[in-house]
Image (tube, rainbow over all chains, first blue to last red; front, side):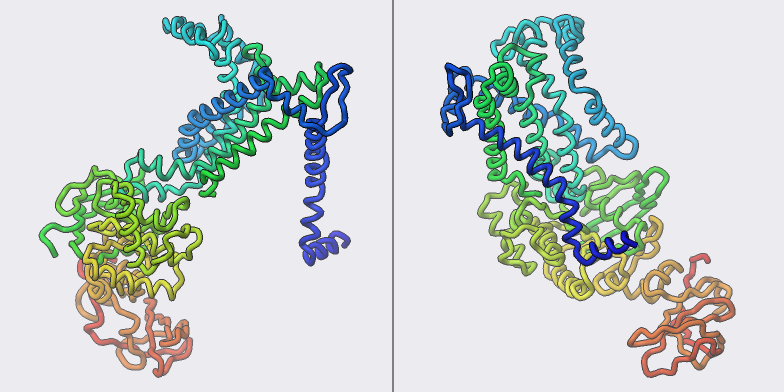
Length: 302
Length: 331
């Protein structure tokens, strides 16, 4: 009886039900998530006293100035370049897979596709990263394959390159890049596939009908319509790479990325203001990136 | 009709596994014809259109366009353009860029593209809509954009896949007239897929009636309506009465099924007797369902004539010329 009365009440006042449904998640998002984020960001406008190591609670931009020190700027540039490289490579690798899944995979093959994409996400992130460390190690399977193909010279030549190389793949930026690419790839494939799924086959037929060869159809119709998906995927791959501090810790050189800097400054170094200032960088980069994408019409087909 | 047909099917079949979407089709569509492919859904008419456009390849047989073999030709090399059932407008392009798409692909300059697209939009009475996005247009307007986009390339054959299916009745009747006028003005071949027999009858020069992947009859609207060759055509085009061969034999002496239009049956006089099983008022006429010794008949009684009650026994007759005997058909 009471249940029936509640149902009647909600039917007459649909907004009440909506408010009740939305309140808990909005409180969670508003207070717990955004609240702590703002608390962190507020820290970035404080500074640390160099002698005592204590935080001075006065609003200042001094901490942001420290970001522009050569060693800190290095970290930022390195992180942005890595995120950009991972994002571009993920888009290139993901597109054909997503295209196949959206256009050709039917019935059981569709299930195989989703399983293949999702299965790596079910296993622990750390397990995957440490497996890659083994794969990339000097005596690892990748080195073995290169040796079997008599291509060790090629691998060595690559590792001799400054910047991307190193003693072995597992302690080079190439290794870090490969692990990032592998770990974040599903986050690119799924939105691109969803975007391509929404392109009706008749649109591709219409393009061909109007005289476009397959390559022209790809450029003029498929890519523009897949762009919102690619941008959505790139938001994942870009921001996940920028924020990660475990992969560059395990695979790669000793040079740090933003995530590691945040981790060290707020932990061992106890410099919360600088950690907070570093944390602002990815947010700003993403804001700029999304603005540019919007300006360039990436969301026009939405 | 010109010497070479615009479209020529020669023993064309298209199978999907065990399903024969189109089976052994031989058909000529003349240059400048308004040709309708009529049939229920799944009858193969759309597959037939897609074979002309090049979206499908025949399993066997050949297709020629203006005398040139086009069987293995991809869609982008055919002198035909299509108006799709769902219009298939590009959502990321403006109306003008949609219309100019084919011109852009063909490498025309920006100025020429704009001018031609503008002219094509004028032709379909959408001048000034060029800057809008397809999503901002109504169904009828999108349909016109699709038409302009196909016609701007000056195809030799225009293919229309149920282009009026998504429009409401009023708009559909208006577009039927406009399409017909447009075709007459341009003088190019229109191949038109529809499941609406009224649409096919009112617009086309000739009709091919499809059923189960096979062409049942090809002919002028009058021929298909008045002289159906198979019971399917009689029933599908105008819901004609199909009289069994035995009854036709008794009436005419020829043993083949007969077709009799509901409006040809006169109630009240005649040799045949039947019982009224149902009646429905349609506005300009009343439809009367009859049972004549187990054969179901439908008659249309025009307004102003007496309509018998349900259950009543009536006499009925018709002008002997109205009964069309379908020689060569079985059933």
